[in-house]
Image (cartoon, rainbow, N blue to C red; front, side, top):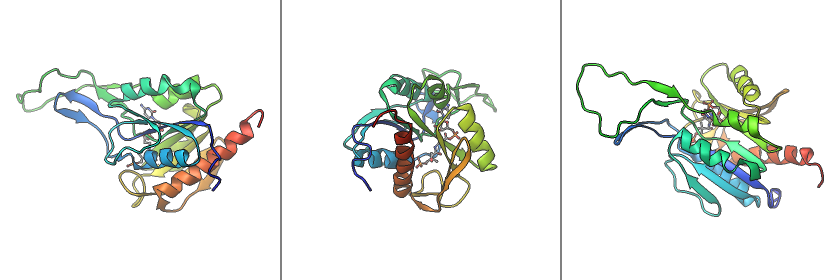
Amino acid sequence: TDRTRLAGRKVLVTAGGTVERLDPVRYFTNDSSGKMGYAIAEAARDLGAEVTLVSAKSSIPLPSGMTVVQVQSAEDMYHAVMDRLDTMDLVFKSAAVADYRPAETAPQKIKKSEETLTITLVKNPDILEAIGRRKTGQFVVGFAAETENLEEHALRKLNRKNCDLIVANDVSVEGAGFGTDTNIVRVYDKDGLVEAMPLMSKKEVAGRLLRLAAERMTRQRVSP
Ligand code: PMT
């Protein structure tokens, strides 16, 4: 690999699972470990990029040699990303972001009372969609975690969120998706399938994704 391929390029990576708080001791989250996003951030760092990692909850140690911004909720992540977007060259949106959050976060621990408890959820901002609307030349790679109709759902997300590439993982398949050290992904652009990767480590997936992005960024660059 060319270790200077991304030299001087500014790369923003989001990783982990957002935490949507219900009260001081309870929250909604998901199974993201942060492994996929951290692997991308580390691979980009090793290719010479200036990396900013915006990390929600993860189960692995924070990487070194990059700027790390730790966040909790989707709203926190939205602000952390949008505040930094303008200066970035390449964005990987690998975090698992909650689509909904509790309408209210109770200031005190919610007491046990009735037989049923109804919690109202409200929609979170879609960060990737906002990036797609705001971007000014950044190369944007989205992710899609699906349990059915992988290609159709991934392509719909690619178009709606205006990404340059989308990395689809079928998270119902053993060895792919949340928590594992491996992944199985299919990468699409607006014309269809770009690359179908077999089962491999998240580190290897990260290397291949960066190669794809770097090639395409170079192609889009106006002057060398
Ligand atoms: O962290 P690991 O344990 O290693 O697991 C890796 C992973 C499965 C989390 C990762 O490979 C992955 O697929 N990440 C995206 C998970 C996800 O939120 O997928 P989605 O299909 O719900 O969302 C599509 C895209 O929109 C994603 O890029 C997501 O970051 C983004 N999104 C979604 C909702 C929202 N409110 N804002 C967003 O930006």
